[in-house]
Image (tube, rainbow, N blue to C red; front, side, top):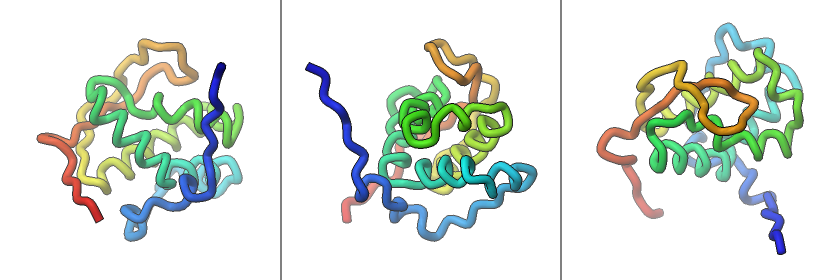
Length: 135
């Protein structure tokens, strides 16, 4: 029997580690200001969004972490999140979040080797591991 994972209101709250993040969309401003862009931004900045990104970078540093967000984004936002402009915008937000959390960009254009709406993406590292503390 398949169990459905429920995204509750707590999991979708803004991650407290991002409260001081000042995102600058730059050339992606039209995407950021759209309803679809705001839904993508909201998910990626959520507790679950950050956990998915960190887990993806830590577990598979040679693969683009944006892929791990795909099933959540398609469920929350829908297919509108996967136009070329929205995929580029999502990549910008992912990079901004990972760098805000202490990660570093490694390389772009890494081929996706699983079935995905993304063909390639950037990879990141937390160096010797993320700086973690328990509140």
